[in-house]
Image (cartoon, rainbow over the protein chains, first blue to last red):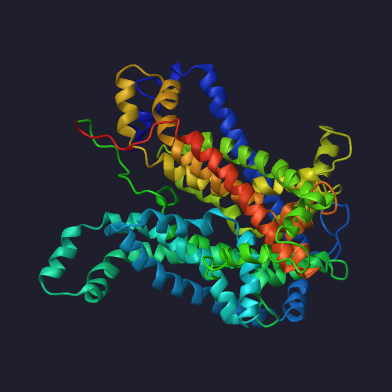
Length: 295
Length: 267
């Protein structure tokens, strides 16, 4: 099948006859990719090295190694409580975003009603506009409602981009489901709620899993909204990390690097799990993977 | 006006708030923004960072994603590798760049050791540092998005073109590019919006008092250093307005292109 797909890219052209310009172009692409990946990898390696370094100034490798930065960062920032808050916030956001997003996506995918386009646009707005734009007014609203600085406020703020994101990811999954199945359920007397629980949710399970993992990764990384709404007891990992950097003058950079590494590992684990379930090439639109024999 | 715009959503609220300065008329905040030198210049500074970063991200991601549409042994591995920088987070990118691209970092040492470039390397605490960090953090998103649009196009169309004698260049020019136009426009908008709101890396990697004093820094300072939420909301509104203008321009350019189904059918 791979050969068929390749044939569509470079049709009926034997490999040996590839013109030099095409080869140069391909080489350039691989070069750019390699340059990007090598530099990013070295950048991560630099942070990792520094986080284990006793002292590292202007040499290729640090003089001595230590794991104490991790222990210090853990103690100094009370990472156990911060990690716990992060877990609470992220899972609450994922759960609520799914509860709002999946039914909304279903309605938007299947029902037609006046004002649907406007509603769609309203849902997409928080994804098109950066968080900091609506973060500041949102934070002032939350503080006026006495929710600012609380866990509930942080969760609410994070829901605003998360729920539309679920809608965006779920819509193609819902459109894949055969409408006859829903009609059949209705014929057998299921109401909308029963149909949802017994027919749609099992069929949508892969999509729900994908959406929830992607929301999870995005929420862990969402700095601006949490930063603007969090109080001292409702900081998440990314906010604590930023505070640590801001006070870099009094803190060893290695300590910040250790926290950055912890952060990266936490996010990376979830992203890799997510990528096992959802092929990145099919995030927006699902199409047949294999070209069919020409009819 | 305030009757119609009861504070339901934060957007309405911000709009109202921005017209309610502590002193002066309804437009005092906007007047202040456009007459204060270190406020209105932030628009230009942000655009100067965000537009090149977005263009680089989209224009580099396009050929790479186009190449990656072909299924091969490496497709999955390379896509995963290219997407992984999403997890880095701005702080790790900033720290990594300070260590790696810094004047005594590995890159500088390598370049001096091999005598490729002997001058001093200044890639941090200036415009270039922020631009590079925007590319590193924005490229994976652009790549992921364009990849899913490219793979959404039915390869049957390109094969039909090749049957009619189109070489790969012509296939890209006449089949893929027109079909990709809406996706590219969407991707440009999303990437631009992300780059335009650059905040942490502009503080950590840039010169936040000078050339990388971006608009979100101005908004943040107004809200959390001067506690002038009214002015901060006005800045946020201006920020959103500039973004919507750019998004509107891009989306209207898009309407010059073909729109319609991206799958081949019998007919």
